[in-house]
Image (cartoon, rainbow over all chains, first blue to last red; front, side, top):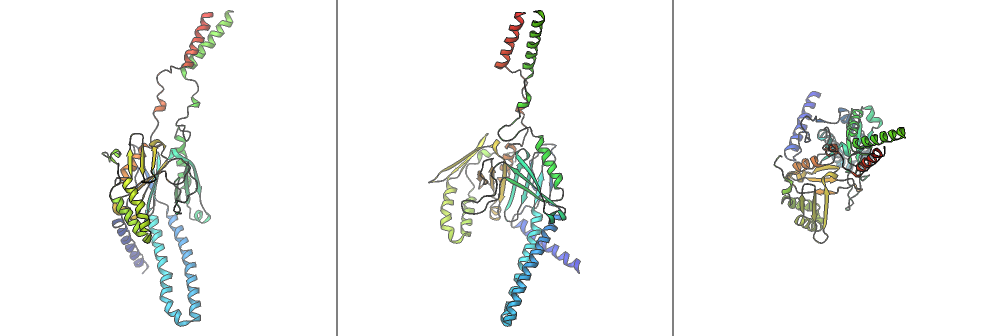
Length: 245
Length: 159
């Protein structure tokens, strides 16, 4: 029985996914990065734990929401039984439909999120209605943060956040619409957060640039070889001078 | 992708106007307020891509021109909402390290958005190694070196 239900939901989900890719032009393949020959490209999704974490969140809000509806409906039915009966289908739809839509959205969100790492940059794709792809080169990353809450740790997942130079918080546009922070990339819900952080940091150290503006770090080079050679000759000339006097 | 030449892009595609019309219709009564500025933005929007950087300009009464060089690009974002996907359009937003958290430039109405993004990616900061910094092969002919040589020769002649 339960396997039949499982198969039916899988089939329905496949149908929704088909509609999304065909009619709503949701790309069904992971994003790529232009690679130089020999460059390794790694693309991955959030871990399974992230999906379980999202589902736990969903069930908690769903239970609270439905409990509230049930309490409200029982109060109305207790006071006026006829009106309560009339409202029963409405309460039932309110209790089920938003939950089903949210549950579907969680699965779709998980399936449309992709992270791609190449030797020099990372690309993050997310979203269903509005598909957003961010590309950041490691050279431009200013700092890397790893965050995880207690429940996330229980599921064994963490979030790696990379920041580039520039504006801090996600601001508001002139129309009062809140904008995402464009100077940030979030690799959310991965089980190997520490490894990815280490990978990004090691790539960051590989770059010779010191930061903004200074493209190469020239100060450490010191005197060129020609200058040093002539200076050595001067020292020897003075030494000979002292000896001969 | 190899025959993609961004220098050809000067005007947004005509489907951008259709997209603007649909977006204004979706706001309901806001249609008449929104469609005029969007129409004029579409009519006056110009792009220019050259070897070093790019610029875009728009506006009738209040004109606006944005210029930036490829090497200062920090992040490239490609955003497509559902209506844009139907038209094959996309918005490529480009960030530099300036203080604003919003995008410095958002390129709308390009049908070849993905090749454009990859073109910009190859040119942006950090996408390639800096080779020019290691090219100190020829001996430096600077003032300090000639001065040092003169001091050396003077010292030698005294002995």
